Image (cartoon, rainbow, N blue to C red; front, side, top):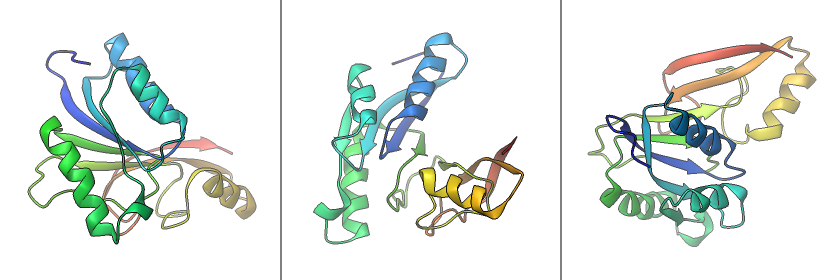
Length: 165
């Protein structure tokens, strides 16, 4: 999906593909200067794979359990992404640890469904995050976009949006 002058992006997902669908809608509207060049999923049986295929996007399925370790899993993903030449990689509901190739020059960002640093780290995803926020009695939640590092949800925060609970 080329929008001319847009940034080549790969999207990694593990679920419904809501963020991917939102990206595609905004690209079509001309309000998001991205070109989605590839989609990676950690599961084959999720709606996000259907969203990507319906949009005609190249899709790679890489289940973590099919690889002996995180490094091998990441190497397979990175080999798939290489010919697509993304300039940014977006983790959009991606539940596996991902580290880009050492020579990747673009940003790798994660969209996290809570206000970091609270409610972050391994195991804090999807409804589990929202249940933790509700159980805490917090009056605000939101989302955080941050750079990806070697540990879950620890990278530099690029932006947050707050919403009342």
